[in-house]
Image (tube, rainbow, N blue to C red; front, side, top):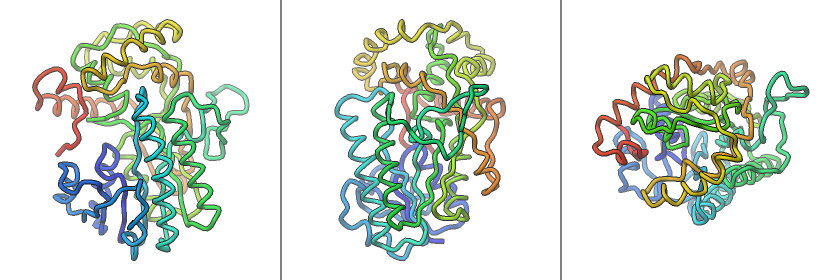
Amino acid sequence: MKVFLSGGTGFIGQAIVSAILGRGWDLSVLVRKPDSPSAQWIARQGGTLVQGDVTRASGLAEAMAGMDVAIHNAGVYEIGADAATIKRMQSVNVEGTRNFLSAATAAGAPRTVYVSTVWALGPSGHPPAPSVTRDETQVHDGHCLTPYERSKLDAHHVALELRRNGLPLAIVMPNGVVGANDHSVFGYLLRLTLLGLMPPFGYGADAVYALVEVGALAEGICLTAERAPMGEDYLFCGEPVSLGSLFAIWRKATGSSAARLNLPRAVMWPQMALAEPVLRALGLPAFFSRDSVESTRAHLDFSSAKARRDLGWSCPNAQDMWPRIISRERELMAQRRGVLAKLKHVPVVG
């Protein structure tokens, strides 16, 4: 099968590249800078590099010609983004989605997969609350907690519009995606914990997420590309776990005493406002931020029953997943010197 992929150089993208090439599929990857370390990593794995940019429509349809499936994964993720990053999120996440999927329409791609997010459905309920949907049929109410959520909601609407207009498209919606070398808030908090620098307090302990391991997500995307009926939506989520319980798992696996005390969000919000410029001055994303506090107001307790039933997909539970992630994260951190170097996400692993 011939696959055309956008967004193959990031944390999720590298897992997708590995999963696709592991199947023996012919993979072409859209990259902005073919000489970058991340792009060269793809080339070493056996992928073909195609220079281009989802924010520029020119040449995209031609690049997709003759492909069996086009997978759009490119996007900008950051919780606690500054003004410039918010602008870039709108450009890449929304207009990039429009450009890529419009090009797939023009190229006559027989199968298309768009990697959205559960945030595009809005916060879930949490049992035993009444009228809890927790599946692909939920509709976002339009109120967004963060600029990232807004950009992905807008992009999701673009994808739905193009599908209504005839694009053969399946949409996948992962929950929070985690793994070693994670670039999300969870990745930074885990590395802080392993460094012994995680504060003894946290916030939002009641929020329930169903985090999905990045390799399992990549497998789900491949299953969608291979066998899902076009026009369907699939949630890829792991075991529902509260943030308080997640930190307890980390404490048990690492021997840390971090994040034992849960503070009210109203107390943490102004402190996070002060943390944002400090983290940026250190060359880090603002993983401690007002947005990170706001995002814990939501449950993301969604079910992957449809993907498990229709695609045969599975995901490890939290107790099995986290010790493996922590072990691999320790290995990666041991290869770097200095606290900041150990804390940062590394663009290329392997």
